[in-house]
Length: 283
Image (tube, rainbow, N blue to C red):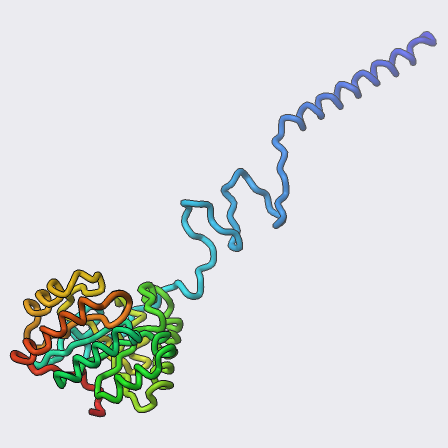
């Protein structure tokens, strides 16, 4: 072997090592790079979702449910359940007719309704909103003192209240009861009316817990839409029969049409029916 042979072997070896390194680098470049996420997992595109992240717009909700949104299991209906939605009462259970007024008290309209009822010697049922009872306790006292029945109508007329948990609904109803009793300590609150008539099983369950009878209606002249006195008067006159529970409003908007309709309706109804406040067990 000549002296040049070792040099040739060194050169060949160096070339082979260089080729191997190039091949390794080429192979690595063909493998997609994966980036660790902040949570220490691997994200592929936008499909990974974590419980503490909101879902993408339009995707199903996979995050932890809100404690105020999960519906409760359907409760047992009260023994005296009525024929309305979720067992709510839609009639008085007798031939007598009950006039009911929702959403008050209101400093403008409630006194006018009370004055008309007093003029004709009629007792009615007022389904009051808790925050209004808190703001106008003198009117709550007047309603109770004049012999009308007080009914719970939720704290602030949340039509979606029935979609919340039974515990949240119960707290809302209890807060409203407390506001009514703060104004009229001797009042007996025996009924609850769900805003919008949007009854659900959790609402009825909360009513059962608080000893409240779910109260619906059978006659609705839609006076909350302020259709005018004639339309309100005609609807009540044509729809009212024995045992009817009539829904009207003494707050929540312009109730001049309701007041005007009552001026004609009260003597007419008294000519055909006995008008009564819904019984509370203490009258």
